Image 1 (cartoon, one colour):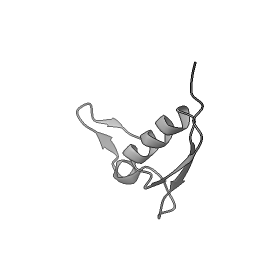
Image 2 (spheres, rainbow, N blue to C red):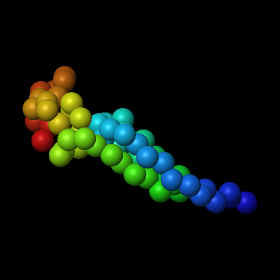
Image 3 (cartoon, rainbow, N blue to C red):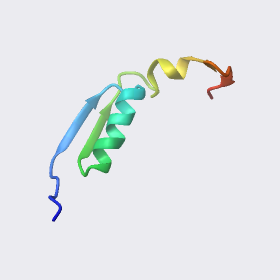
Length: 59
């Protein structure tokens, strides 16, 4: 028998770790509030235009 998860979580920061945490917690049954101080999500990763080691465009 599965236990129903009841509750909510607020994650401050929507970088790569924040977004992954939000997805994991939402898939576990929690209500998730993702808070970001800037107007875009992605953290430092969104500022990079090339990814290592393949040098592909990240956008």
